[in-house]
Length: 398
Image (cartoon, rainbow, N blue to C red; front, side, top):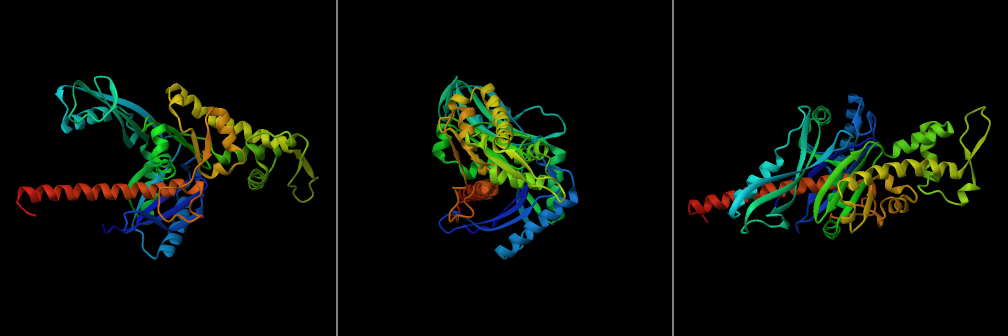
């Protein structure tokens, strides 16, 4: 199938990235170019300075266009932010007989009919599982029963926040093909079918937010955003040691640790000092404690949410960490301690021809957004082909 390149735009708190993907002859997908710019004008996944964000997008876009040797006109836009929420919902209809595709369409319409405040917009409506007369996890078409139920996860956000990011794209003469939740994009690229089947929690730790997506019994059971990310750890260090954020970030990268070590109680670190300032030192364990407490709190908020939803015991494959925050030393052992589950660092895996510099945790969202776009294009093409086949059958063509 001939297909135009698929382009994803990721506007994050720390970085703005553009990913270009192209279909291979074997039906796979390959990332052929990446544009990357430091982000400015974003805080906790939310835009506070329109022109600054536009400038960052322009830089990343120009890099990707030059690397891919093409003009980009359309993007799949990945977004996060504390305003994004996941809401499980169930629809149920009487059938009293054989279940047909029309019944399935009907029950999905009922499940997706949710009442949201006027200022909120649905981003995704994800089908979880069907139940017939209380028997869950079935493929209902052809079965008989009295009631058919469908569980869906509604992912929604503030319309104004979404519109502002769309306006950024349009300022660069880009059309937005779809708006995508960043957490779902990361899950699309970093999780295997086996992990989803066994149940798994993906946590993407970004600069200003932490996204999470939980799979239980091969379905997306919950998703959401915690408005805390790696930048908050940096700010905690800056306040505790009275440092500029740039120096606090460097200290975090070089010595930060999500677990407090015994050696850290005796080792001291030289703190950056300005001109004319008295040299200062701090215990390594103090730095480790600051990092540990913030990360433990963030992961604990997700654990509390999943415990409330009664999902923790369904996560047989444990926890997968992606995003720039996955580089934090010993963050995986901390996650294992918080959730009581095995944890691994994840990276994009479901794309052909990934080079070592692309198969990294911080690219999970962008690569996943390209995959989402690829899936959408293929689905639309298959639907169009199906319509033409039906028309051909009706009119005796072919």
